[in-house]
Image (cartoon, rainbow, N blue to C red; front, side, top):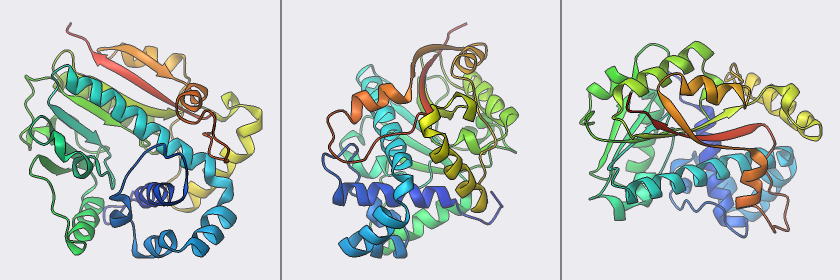
Length: 292
């Protein structure tokens, strides 16, 4: 991403969450703030049933499986977070937060959980502006921390915040690693293991190489790759679902779960009568920081 350019992917994710809540049933992931966080053009489309049908269900129909991925990864991460809070974790760090709305939606956790959103300053500026225009105040338990993951270590970014290194935290890295060079991904995960207290947890999503994607899904995945490249946010990192978790474990983690796309479909989309199903190209992995 260019220094002054906000994330187009973050715009798309907010738009997907907004239209999902308005038109899809049953709801996989409920985000009533997404409509406030997306752009004015997407709000117009989302609020008009006709425009939504023309754009989302006709022009962009081929991207419905990607929409399902957005929803599944968010629900998976927040389910794991909910369990972690129940175990006493009181810090949540969202890496590449984009236009995330967790702190806005879960004000019931404001006294139990401090939330840290790390992302590019241009994206954070857009987020602040949109919420201000809609009259939505940032929760007091939320800190926005500007960072460029390719140039700054996670430990240095968190050092500029109120994050307590001696306490356990929960970290999420969703829909981000495919846009970051492999060395930077590994560097970020290594830095996280060094800054996080033993027992801290991490949920991340990653994309697998095209040759490992189900043959029936490859045309759709290729379409997504071309679309992302044309928008200036190409996928640059892909990981083997067997080798990558093992590699992450060498950095100071233990693997709790490597959730496949088909398992995500079974958990969150079973019994649906519409076309909302995830592609077989993105895994969600859950790790714990070791104490050694």
